[in-house]
Amino acid sequence: MNMFEEIEKEKQDLPKIQNITKEVSHYSFNGYQKFAIVVYLVCFCFGILLGNLFPACGTSSNFYGTCTTTEFNFSLMLFFWFISFLVCLFFFALGHIISLLTSINEALRKSA
Image (cartoon, rainbow, N blue to C red):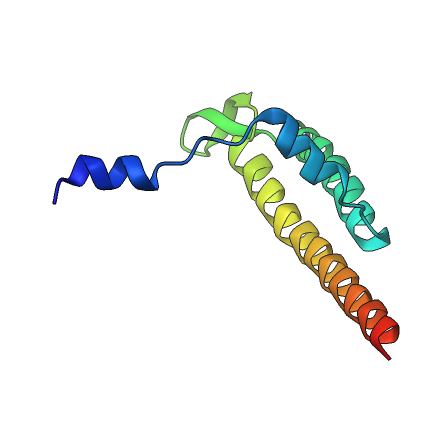
């Protein structure tokens, strides 16, 4: 058994852009999924704003630890992006579950 022959048998071409867009264009989002996408876009911008509003201390001076220079709070921005991603993913998944249940209900009504 030649491993390269096995790979050639199993090898598949990567999907073309046109095929991917055809598959995605057939999918319609429901209200929960649209809400999740809009909220994530707003939270994405708000994360950048939070990183700028609450800067991190770049260098401190003296015994009291006063900040002499401040810089963009990258960790706060990433934390906010991560939390908003999880929340929006929850809403998007909830919308996907509802759409699956709706399609199952329609299929059951057609068969009955």
